[in-house]
Image (tube, rainbow, N blue to C red; front, side, top):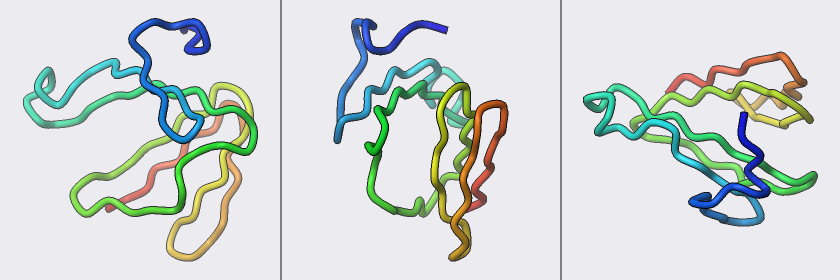
Amino acid sequence: MKDLTEETGAVECLGVKYKTILTPEQTAGAMSIVDSWSPAGSGPPRHFHEREDETFVMITGTCKVWIEGEELLAAPGESVFILL
C-alpha cells in the first residue's frame, strides 16, 4: 500500500488525504474504491449517503462509525459495512 502522506495525486479535505483507486466509470457504475489517510482526530463529519453503501477496511489505527444510532469503533484488521 502506498503512503498517502507522500502520494502525489491525493486530494486533501478536512485534514484527510484521499486517493481514488477505481472510479465508477471504471466499474460501469458498480462501485468506486478510495484509499484514505486520516490523522488522529480528523475525518469527515457524521453524514449519510442517499445512493451508496459504504465499506471501511481498517489497515492501521481505529475509526469511529455510527450505524443506526449505535457508535462502533473499528480496529486494524476489521471491516465495517454500512448499508444504505
